[in-house]
Image 1 (tube, rainbow, N blue to C red):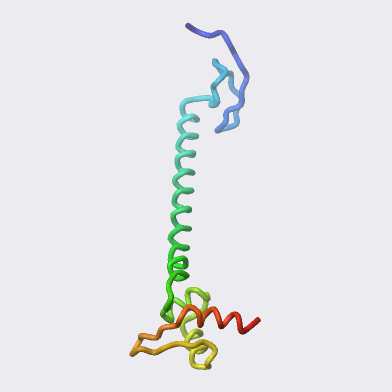
Image 2 (cartoon, helix red, strand yellow; image 1 turned 90 degrees about the horizontal axis):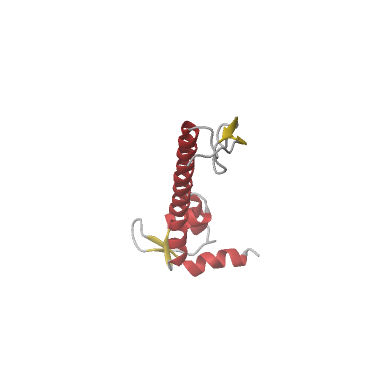
Length: 120
């Protein structure tokens, strides 16, 4: 059954005017339809990738917040500073730490919290 309906529309992809044969046509041609589909798929993949990247970036911080004893590198990541700055604060007495051996310096989570409470 053919339709004699002729509706003037604007293509959702290229923006050109065209005469639609049905009331549901959104694109002027198969080429525009395919291009719009590919753009939609690409956008969903980019969004999924951005979400995954955000989760990967925030996961280590969430894991560090759950630890009771932190390494100097962990403390530097939490404070967004350099490892040398953390060692400076330990050496100056601002931050309490325990040296268990060579490269085994640990900071208690509660001592790190006290550092910020004392600065108020």
